[in-house]
Image (cartoon, rainbow, N blue to C red):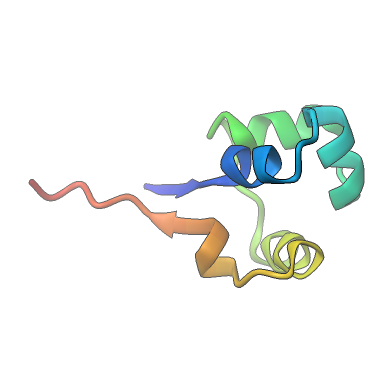
Length: 68
């Protein structure tokens, strides 16, 4: 499962969801779905998000280790 750390990054920027979504150029509802892991951005959107945050895609989105 692909997970993300958007919420942690948002807190680093000291923004609420609406402000952060606006910063990323996303509708707030869509950003909320990403942050809550209810939806995944397509690759193009993930790249755009990473560019706006000046981080790599792998810094934001990663595969959850499910092996125990």
